[in-house]
Image 1 (cartoon, rainbow, N blue to C red):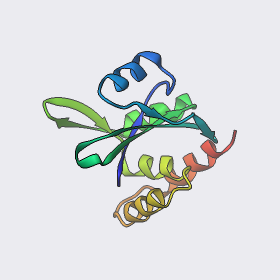
Image 2 (image 1 turned 30 degrees about the vertical axis):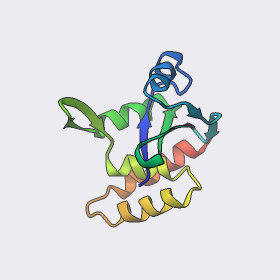
Image 3 (image 1 turned 90 degrees about the horizontal axis):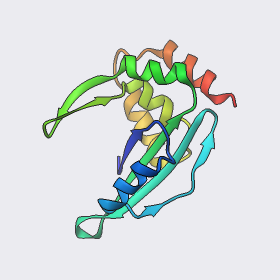
Image 4 (image 1 turned 120 degrees about the vertical axis):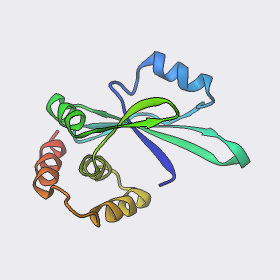
Length: 130
């Protein structure tokens, strides 16, 4: 993919947005909502004038937020532990986007073995309701 997807508690959090601005993420879209997911894109021009984009996602469902945390895996990235969402949760969240790159990501993730299809269907249905 050509962006980084982050799940955040509040896409309008002023403190987070200020920190992102301090590290160069000065281009920002207006928030939008699809189903029970709010989205906002923030970008900066990186090395070689390439655009680096963060897709901020806020899940407006406490039960699903907890399901994401329960299914996440902790990984070490540059001496910092971060939680990485499961393949199923990445598919669910990307399914709310109409972008071609997200559709390609979903196709690639759907090729993984041992995906929990029932989990996918259950949460996609619940989250698509407003």
